[in-house]
Length: 158
Ligand code: HEC
Image (cartoon, rainbow, N blue to C red; front, top):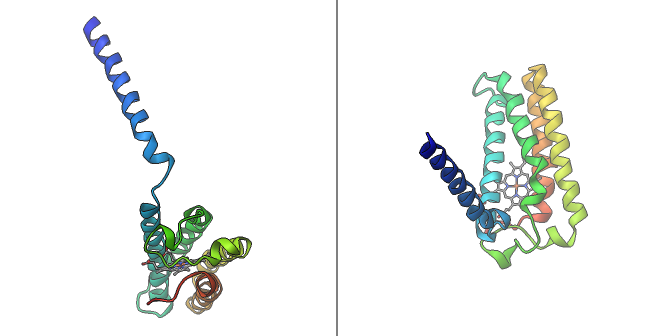
């Protein structure tokens, strides 16, 4: 019994030690990893848009899934700003994020807010289940949400 207790306390110490050792990598996300994560997140947002577009075009009938995709984009938009810390532009790796992001930060914040607003509205419209209305709002998300930001803050593909 005593040795079991001893073993348990040793185990606890080991767990605490490993958590402590793990911390430095959590504190500062390496720029290259952050950029990759940012691009993966954008691709995920793009995939949600693609899924909603398939419904809007009538390719599939899953109208009741549109709100889920819209909510997912909305949730990701809430944390989008922290994926663009200073010094995560070209100087940090392969990225299409333009210097304009940090030069016009308040405009960039507004572009993120636009995506938040339009995706929230998308979720609301989706609840109605009207495919034409879904298509119309999807266009607004694409134009004002995605396009509004990409136009100014994302480098054209080379
Ligand atoms: C507030 C600005 C902003 C908004 C809003 C935004 N994007 Fe982006 N997006 C960017 C930036 C900047 C990049 C380039 C990121 C990089 O290369 O590090 C990007 C990259 C991408 C990429 C390419 C990812 C890759 O493979 O490298 C896709 C796809 C994408 N966005 C889709 C979307 C869609 C779809 C929406 C709207 C639902 C959207 N984005 C909204 C700024 C934005």
